[in-house]
Image (cartoon, rainbow, N blue to C red; front, top):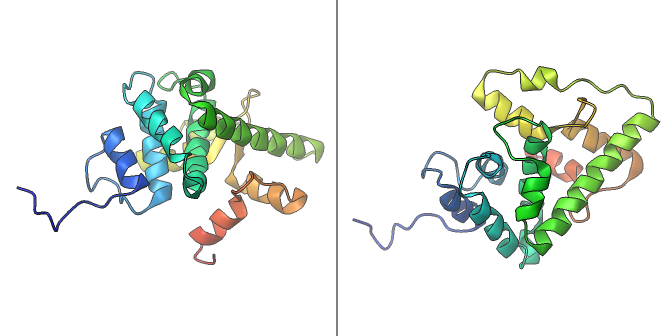
Amino acid sequence: MRFPWRRRPVGHSRRLLDIAGLKPGSVDSTDDPEVCRQVAFRAAERDDGVTVEILAFVEELLEDGAEYEFVVAFLENLQNLVSHGLDTFRSSDEIRGLLGPRGVICWDTVADFWAGVADWRVRNGEPLESSAQILGVQNEQLWMLLWTANRTLATGEKLGIADAVRYEKAVGSTIPGYSHISVALRMAGQG
């Protein structure tokens, strides 16, 4: 029996967890970065039927400008996951094809930002590491963090959040309305 005064938390994180079918309490619904990671894994899974529902909710969230940063964080996690080319995940083109018009704009904005990061790294002659090391991680919690915080380029090399922060500092270019520097400061308790 449910008591009316003991409702579950609501909001974008809680609703996204519900749509993804993640059990209450399995993820802290107030920790947006963790929700984004967990739900991105569900949305990326090739044989998961909830992908369309998750992406429809993302489109709904984009109707409210206040939800933009949350959506960008989610889509970035999702893009990073599918960039690794693992058989268990859908391809980037498959995900993009399931997004609504606002979602496609955000998806392309995130992709363009990361293409800028990759070009900047190459122009500066900084060698990139292979993504093989992060893809071989066996610990589930660790690969959840690594696979969503890094992306594999077509060359098999990887870029990560640290690259995005360095790029933003050097070039001053961010994803409009979303800065990896701000995210890093918040995570460090300084923002």
